[in-house]
Length: 246
Length: 302
Image 1 (cartoon, chains in turn orange, purple):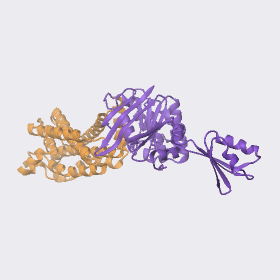
Image 2: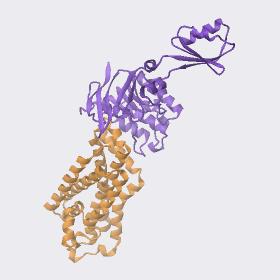
Image 3: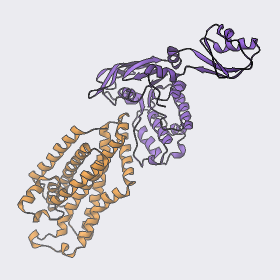
Image 4: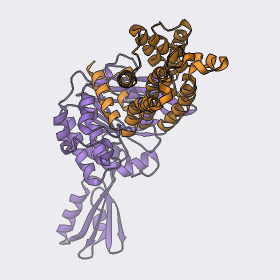
């Protein structure tokens, strides 16, 4: 336990020593919210959206983005570069279990993405008068499913990428289609059937819909829960299967 | 008491047999060296001892524990300094020590350790800003922070300047004096001669010889050669008659006397009786270097 605590604390310190990744992972989601909220028409209720405003729809998307940034860029790059540099190999000669190292990375990423989400939700509520999730338990469940699916994909990237640099590149490449299907450019409600079906099957698309449902006061739909669990199991299983410590 | 037991170890990488039946034992409190040319299988051998690689044949026991047995006990007993391993760039020395200390049940006091290794003033320095020697000393400190019974050091002084190298040798002796058994890989002859109680010379994945440094030298050749310039002409026949002398040659203004046993004493007393002074006197002895070349058939890399 003390090793896990110490590792998590150390990894968190190291994270904050990289100004660029801090900026990217922690500041991008709130900044995006503020920029979108600054557009006057995004704050007007739209009858087609059941009286919701565009900014209301964007909050779950930005919450999901907060997770995706950590899962697809920070985590795989960090892990792959530790492997490349022999940091993991050095650790293998100590009593610390490899899983502890993984656990520390996941704990840190989860804690920091939770922090980002809280900042996003608070800003949305206080500045743009976006309602807080009506169903907190459902929101939490949707959030946990999002984290596990996205981190599983991130770990799979870490397992397969030959180097830290390539892990970062692969993660970024994956980030864009994920963000597209999450509705960052075209909200899911405005997508045609084909796009929305694809979106339903992507981890971030299913995540955004689940968060949106919880915000409206419903439990996530079975399809989306199944999609998120499926990504967790398949990507997580493959990540474990192909993981290399050196 | 035997601490490390390697018996008929075999390790293959694809078709290449890196280690081909290596056996040796290391006793408690010993500094045991593994010496050999590049690609001889030295590092692979110690990596099997450290549990980093799984042998394809034979057995390894450290304190009776199989490194691949999966009990998780070995890392509490064995501290490893790896040839190529790094820490995160921005991790500070003190943080690294504190972190690694937290991995062990009974860690050493890392501040004392850092002090012994002359790194106290680097405690707040990030890993990427350390010099090669400082990184090397930190890696030794990390290998020792768990209070191990056995330390495995792989090419400890490679890349160090001569002063740092000597300091590191002193350090290794200090560690041994504290009761730690040491298994070290080296390709520096001087290092092996200075530190190791016994040596295994490995070549092509096999053990060529195991002995003390002096034993290895004697195994190859125990002849000595004395070179000097006599202050007055000497009758070579008189010198050739000295017991143990096998040859007397003239080389320029110098005489070269070859022989075994206590050659120098016999020679100088003979010369003294003739009232001849041996000027520029030099004794040449078969070195570990020569022994290494004779045993592996190639020059050392240093």
